[in-house]
Image (cartoon, rainbow, N blue to C red; front, side):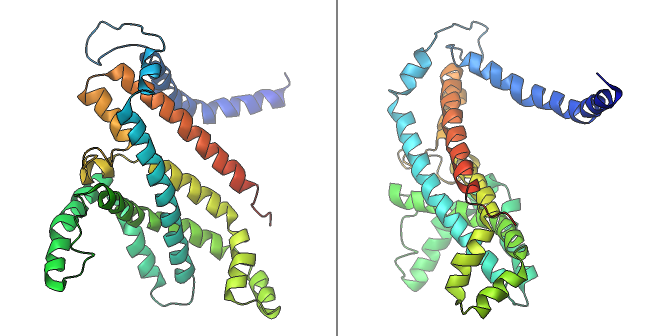
Length: 292
């Protein structure tokens, strides 16, 4: 090995080595240990750990509660990702136009993202239960008189409203960065060619911000799949477990039912599904990105 390669290798060890060691200790080793526990019937407390092979994985596919929570999570992810990204993109388009209060509004819309999901859940629980009912009594509007956390369908939309309200501001910042970086001459050329606002958006803006769309879709999909704190604070999976996400189901299985082995088996399967979906999404959207 010549001196140049040796120096390059030493640079990599010095700069990447510490971060890799922390990543190994915090992520890789716990993940491998978790995989081991998924093949046991450990309760998370007892010293006696029994190897059960694939029994946990066979059981969870027969677990109706787990299957229902998976269906709810998939439905929630599909709706949440679409609504959150549409709101974020709309806000970004409005706030990159010539309006005087755009900087203030960007801060206002971003603020919900810096508040804990657990705190937001409790605040919105109060709003749905007490705030909306009070407004409903005063205005007699049907929207405010709905039992927002009392039925499966309204509780689902309550979680969608809060999660979209929380996440749209963060994605808005990414979309704004993408829109600002579009070359001005492209927009001017489209205007000179007679393209109207819709044509400029679909033919120029949208293709040019595909890299932002890739990032925003990846973030919103991963947020929706791993939603836990908001779900726990707002509905606790109710009513009748109709809004129990997979993350909440795993938590309850491992730490409330003391089935740590089964809980880690669910987490392992969940990881495989989420990794597969996000990898497919990134591959599909990156193929549509435009090189400048």
